[in-house]
Length: 237
Image (cartoon, rainbow, N blue to C red; front, side, top):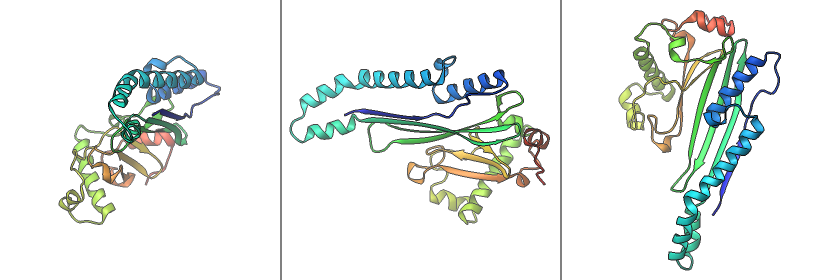
């Protein structure tokens, strides 16, 4: 058995604005590796993260594996080893960058034994005027926008799947592991806002992740158009 770690980390290396550079690097490091790595150079972060991953793997599994191996005989030994082989991948990239909006995407995969690994994807929508992540409260007005968004998401999902009712979606598996509610895992682009739901958020593993895109025209009554225009200076309608 063994552990395998692959990291493809995207980060800024130069900018005329040092404060912007430092703030972006801090955000990216926290979301890819954790707050304990803030303040270190990117190369050192990756190396230390790898060292910690390997160290934890050995500490967590070595004694148990050796005992398990001792208790097995013949062909069973190879089967035992397979359950102790772990792997992890971290891949990050700039998905979108225009004017004052930067969208940073983080994909992770981790296998820790069992039937299958877990793939997860997360997004950071960053307002470059203050280097802060954008949240739904920054983009939508009025307190009741979440209920409206939830209805819009269900309606768009029906359109995407070419069905006429929520019941048909539920029969397909949607909503079986959680509620379809607008969360903070979304990304912006020129066309609209896309909500990204990882496996188990509201669908079983076999269905994979779900993306639901709401064009700006469908959310124009609840979205803060001034904020969107300030970010990217788009003409939306």
